[in-house]
Image 1: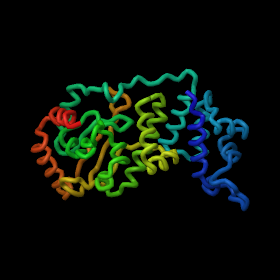
Image 2: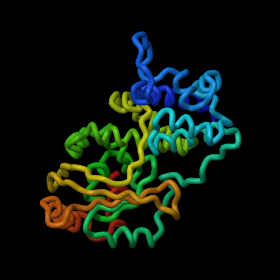
Image 3: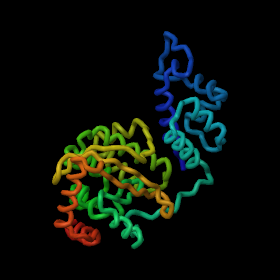
Image 4: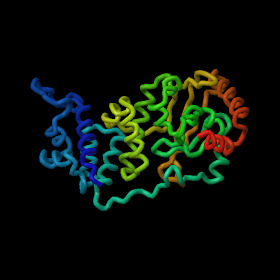
Length: 298
């Protein structure tokens, strides 16, 4: 795969984020570039300037793990950025093979997975892919993402909802932060699975229809998104602060199980109970019935 432009833009963007002072170099008075110069990265990585220049221009195929590690240290990459660099190098290899992953349209959750999701009754639980399609949900997640499911003519996709549906501005009180996270997840997945046509189609759609997405996509930020707290403003029950845990599924590479929970005894927990009651009245206790309703409405 020819991903030289992707490699070049990523390395240039990371180089621009490291100041000379951070790595013990003099800033100088006539510095014309933001961040480090190529020559400075080469010195810090123990590489010749000529070789690093070739790498930054995208000729990363064949770079050894030792070279990639040296560049990661020189550019002070975090774990997600380092993994992304290795993914880009792997994708550039002539021997690279696309991972075997099912498309969102063909994915059908195992019955045991649906049983496990339905057994989680205190908070939303769902399975998504790196493209941010909602592939399997419990009833609370179906109710939690009701607006995402209600987008006309579209399968439920968190990224599409975030950038193309005005209701997302209300659902996410800190929309800017959610937008950054969403783009970073997609950018990370694009490095990990560069042959995914569905993913590239989604990125192209969002880039064409959303200036906000296009601007953030150009920043080349990546991240691992595993745990933390988020604020929501649900259209039925109002504001909630929820903890989340994202778990990679060993049986389904590329898929993530995410669970949202509220602090016990908190106002958010009370509102989650209200949402559960609303979900029971709206959808019943079967996520299969909710999914059938979505297909019928769509």
